[in-house]
Length: 541
Image (cartoon, rainbow, N blue to C red; front, side, top):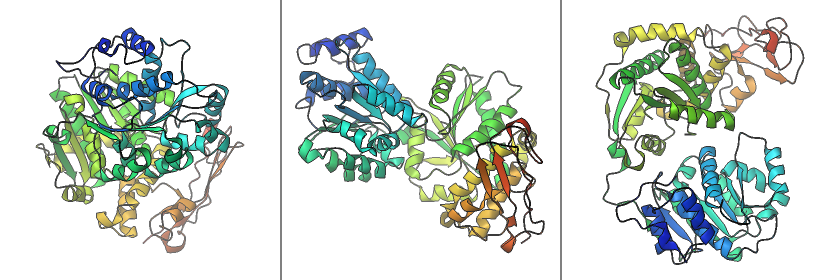
């Protein structure tokens, strides 16, 4: 991405004699004529192209080029890196960003002779196949997400390929640490050659510099590092430029009807030129919303429905992203892989701010709505600093009665497996918030069972007893507990052998087996062999 340029922007031609000619030819070939502010600041104010730096720049400002060019120039100026050894390592928080960086890198280096190989490593693909490609090639640049990079470095033979590292870049560092990658980053740094001995260049790019980043910086940057910023300290923060509303509903029954009403209102208000990203708490919750709204909008040919979440393949995610961009009107249901509407609790205030920021990138304005149940509304009290005001339209009770009826009908067409996964994901996510929700374990189960009823489930979906144990919910009344076994093949599912009177402490003691093979047996799901044994009924409290 070129990013926005300023009126006084310097042309790339001004770097003639200071930046590698092959890189300048690459920039010209892809139509980059002028520098963006962050590119100009880095390339003209960095003491040398191999200096350590902390650069504050927002997403969409052209920072990818800003960190690629110094690292690539330094490598080309001293190219004696042994075959099979990585010179430049770039860590990215998401697969999409990693692919974008790699694409930019390949474009910039396309005019080099000989060329430079860039390898991408991210989850959702075959690790063995990717490793084979990595080991059989001679990648001088690796762009990776923290999780997959750790997979690579866990192999000592592969880790040795980084022993001649020249440059380490952390891109979107604040997002990376906010997403929970702090442990992974520290593990990566432990497995790379120690900076105090190998003296590799460290570059950290981040819109903000929270305390978590400050704790990691000494391991990446020297004490003499250069701090550059294109973020105007007097500029109104992104979070304050986005109009934000909250919608609080009385129970889990009203969540999806209220969301349906919001989408209808937004679509009508924009007269059809409508794009919305709806963030969910979990990947399985996103899959449920995608299925539900696909059914709700099945007779509407104008609004396309998409989902983007971690359980989809990379090819699927890339195709979906492109289709969403091209659609005139569409709703994207997403986890934090990628807004206007947030359904359910964000993990914390920082995550909320980051999500809202996606509606106002590179100076654009946007609108955001957070949809919470009454119990989840504690989030607003804890984050009073956020400029969130109540939504001006009534979205409760009788006001959404029509939408509630339509949601109920649509849920009848959502398959039980999708509901079951969403149920378990909801329980696991909210278990971490029981204190804030002011719920005991019994109260939490009551809430998740209300959620199941809202999905149209005749009884709570069965949860594997091992999962229940890991959640610390063993013995809690109201759960439909069984043993879910996954086998590699064979017959369809067997019928569950549930205890009709409920197990100890009100748990049901059913058993269910899922087979990946051919035809269905008793209680099986037919050709796919997805047996759905009935299991035991809920015990009575």
